[in-house]
Length: 253
Length: 253
DNA sequence: CGCAGACTTGACCGCGCTCAATGCGAGTGG
DNA sequence: CCACTCGCATTGAGCGCGGTCAAGTCTGCG
Image (tube, rainbow over all chains, first blue to last red; front, side, top):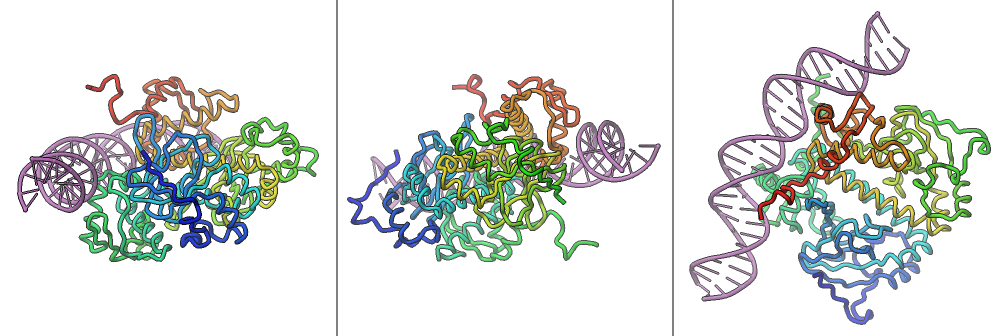
């Protein structure tokens, strides 16, 4: 199923967290240099997954969180009925599995959207570590609370936003996350299929497709398959935050 | 604004967490008896809020989480545009504010839906405590991860469920949470207005109203204002989990 | 008693879903 | 090299759920 390759004997390819180009995203300032050394003993680097592989599957025993190093991961929950909800997309530097912390089993499945490498953080060791390093505990609380906030933002989108607003928001979110990694904010490849976008945003695939072409006709984006270029970011921001009231400048009183 | 009454000099009305009837919900088994004593030193009990009072407000400095002791609280986020999303309802024994943990400011507002008393857990002290009590850290990780899961379930509802399914789900959720506190699972008062239900479930107030009367006409519930009686829980469960496919017994192959 | 806010009910309509057909690119095998 | 297939994406036609707008009713409170 999931093809996981452990690399070497730990010395050869075991790049340290200190040298990792993502360290400022993945573990920002939370821990001192000394502490980093301890952390590295615990983290298992170099798991590789191919497109479609599961990093972990819902309802299997919870063992670890995973930091995405390269590639991309989507998480989703499945109900008894079999319908699925994509709950998030995770890009390099982001942490997957926080929704299962201290649970017996994984609360969602995590699937690689493309060839992806991750670092594994086994919880058993994490418990010890967070106990010894107060900064790390803080950091986890912070990451988890942000995960909650993200999910609340998603709920707001799903319940209040139109199709165009949702898609503009998603494009901008991806854009800023690429920018954080010093990649182009205006030109990138979508790691996920239209289907995943639709599911995540609570839309039909056809609607996603239609909005993409509409945006293209309006000159807001240029899209060919998964290649996307944002041509008018300000307009997209305007769409993504559209209020239901008229903007102040147009209101009567 | 928020009328917060600190009670006595701590000895008189300061019921201990051990004696609190909600302790098994609020702090289940996570800490030993000795540890409970330490915890009690930190928790401030007896804040009282009237209907409509804010327990805390979005974007004000984050200081504490709050455990609901009696009454009910709703949390909501507000965007720049001014539209609001109710993100949760909190009943006695449940913890409010986890989405702001380790943030500078509260990520949402919390408003009392009726006369409500809460216990306050100041984070500064919590940091020390979780450091000393490994069980408590676990407990918080667990509560926060469940909060994420709840929010993901909400997202699933908002993006996949019909109006009837959403309302059936909410009624059943409230029912089981009342039951956990040894209250009737079939007869209770809704702590929130139709408006709040509508906002939470991503519906219009009118739709909520219509579904309530439809359920009533079908003999599933009896509702008069905020008084609700669930007459056919099994039917409601059936509705809440309705699959988009035909049930297996009716499928062709 | 009267008012304001919450709730209900009805008529209408539009966004986005459904169903169905077609287009397109990549991988496969003859 | 083309023919074929399979998955994914696009486009069009039609319609239904739930939103909007507008009255009307109920409830609690001063």
